[in-house]
Length: 79
Image (cartoon, rainbow, N blue to C red; front, side, top):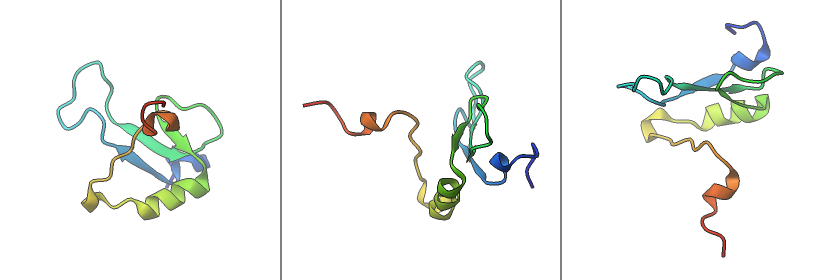
């Protein structure tokens, strides 16, 4: 059930940030959810189709890593 009444929170996951021993002032967890039609309050949002696909792929038993940043950062140094 969506807790805000829009489509953005029907599908989501928690990015395990600053847990389990949180450092004061760094926030607590980051939510990854489908676009809800507006800005987020520190969350990460993607399209509904991509979110559904991601949720099917995620397997907590495999300790997945979600990187937040620009795609160019994953390509390594420029040559």
